[in-house]
Image 1 (cartoon, one colour):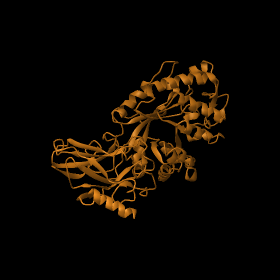
Image 2 (cartoon, rainbow, N blue to C red; image 1 turned 180 degrees about the vertical axis):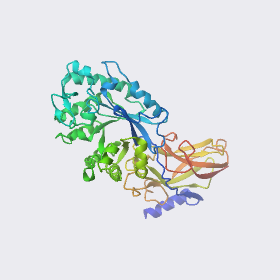
Image 3 (spheres, one colour; image 1 turned 135 degrees about the vertical axis):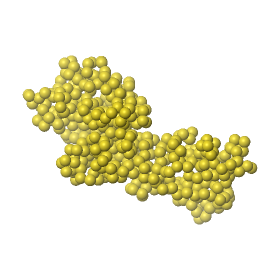
Image 4 (spheres, rainbow, N blue to C red; image 1 turned 180 degrees about the horizontal axis):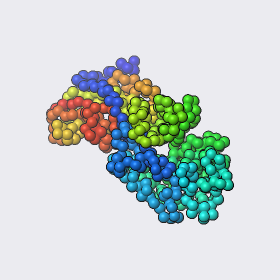
Length: 482
């Protein structure tokens, strides 16, 4: 009965009587660069020698499909070699190469390392100022012959100096639209939230909360990521719940450091994060995982993307070598990573009078594993034969943020279709056209986009007909005089 009534209402409005054009576009399969998602490439990885540092300054690895973030992971000592004297250029200079291409940057500032000659990831001047800590040998823990130093993560002198460093970092990067996210990296070796490869000393959950609070104190606008290993060494999941309560997202490092069922461990925590925040995954150093026989075909990395509903995936290796060995995998991940707004169907009148209402229908589906967290509104743009914009009509009631994620090709479609199951809540939308002296009679290209309430496109779609500004031509409409 409700369906019949809906058809009668449509007929009463004239929707069923007009000649309409209907298109059903196909997903092009192209990798998309969109806000809040994508591949992250490691530029610095704990030291200054890998992974893209040897590239020419003009080389930003533009050939890596879906890459949108350059990741800078460095010890604190590189950036503040003397107290109060900072060397930000070490990250800002390479970051500008990618920022100029529309990428973002992400950071981790660590306080303990185990690599070549990295004796003081926390600057040595912090120890000389009275901070307590331990000398260690990687793999052996605290030993007299150790040359590498790890701070006591609860020491008040260390925390005071760290507080000042984070304040300086936040003054530069907090709320900066060029920054995608910042890891909480001040606790544990490599900033991973454990001491397995450093002192091996246990720390309670209260220590991790203290470092979470210290980052939250300074970074109030930029997304912070908490490592899943914060729960290691008997601390339990309460620290990850605490990070979520403070508005932080989840990051899982070293996917496939082991193989099989041990490829990753905390996907069951992801539902606490992914519906509202972009989850970050990092694979193990690809070469090491490959050589140990754990990587195999890499399909478990794709499965991790599915299980965590990840928005970001990192390439923890030399990016072109990784791409060459895993191109098919990268292409498959690009079809699922983050969100992917698929236009399944669109319809509009073949002809409509200027000054009257133009009714639009469409059916959307999210083909990715995560919600479109940035959100956005569909817009119809009319363009003349020279490409000039003559009309912009935004569906402000339809936010693509609400499109549900689901298994491949099985997420629930949502639309404005006369015969769709969503008719009761999303009827065809009617846009009032300008009068004839503003919208002259003629034939215009009809484009669709997703973006701001004012019609500025923001989100790339897997459609043909891109005008170069993320508007996609679907066909044409004839505007008639009244």
